[in-house]
Length: 70
Image (cartoon, rainbow, N blue to C red; front, side, top):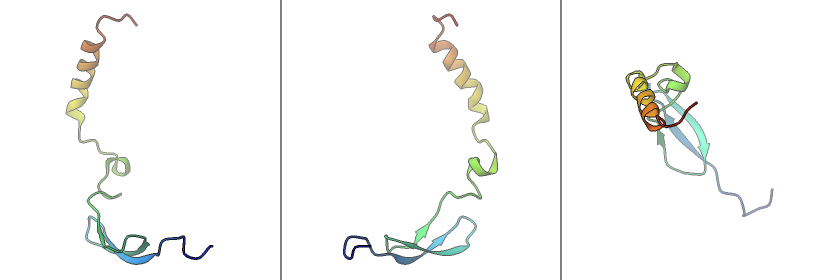
């Protein structure tokens, strides 16, 4: 690697949502506290928070495209 063109890596502490701390390296020298990670994100847990909105979204779609014939 060329000298002087790459950012410096610093060890930081990353705190997960369950309170565990992991040490990583980053170009940002500040510690990081996560508000979303694989323990509580719907993509990893499979839970949906907006099940009630599903029916409303379908109704909105139908009203928006009511004049079209599919």
